[in-house]
Image (cartoon, rainbow, N blue to C red; front, side):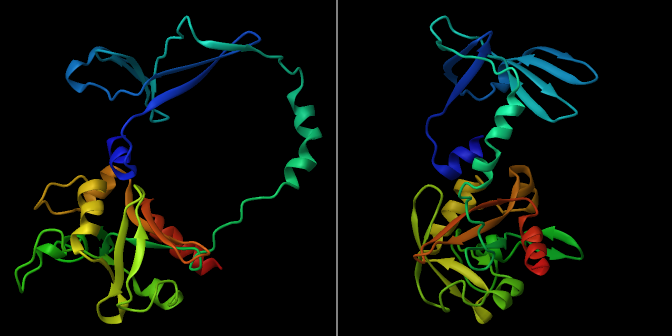
Length: 264
């Protein structure tokens, strides 16, 4: 939750809830508080679930589904509307089938034209790891004095060879928009155009290391950090006007991207 707030610049959140009673729908809102770990109480476990409370709310965790739920109480002033329950909803869906199937569908994005996936890790002996002296940790490399925040995102040979024209030519500056609407000045650089860097270099590291990974200054990025947050790659998109944007991509996204490209 906090990682998403950081990455997308979310300051305030609320739940919008729809509840159902007989022939009625009820609408209300509730706070979106984080669980207060220091005030946990009323902890009860069974073979299938865990129940607990904090100082504000009650929670239920289902082990088999790995789903955490919160209990909500419907306020007296909830907005409500009367509804009619359809006796046979399948007949209604069948009557709408042709309209639904013929509706304009969202065009599927094409790999290499509309987007590429870039891993934030390397693979060594079959194991994914974030190199300690390159990539996200380039600032930790030897050879010369480096400032914290000197980082780059690797552009693998697979991406370079299959989609050589996705990015502008080497050393040509372009704008890369982050999820929180920051515009980064970036360029493809290094030998064989294998790195994506920003100018100033700290701009990319501020978003990646501090905002997305929530690392402290001087802390090395590791694959464990990525695993814990649920992403290990980034997706770089390009729209029809040539505008680039970047976002995080879930675990194993790069592997799936490679597999999809090879299938086509």
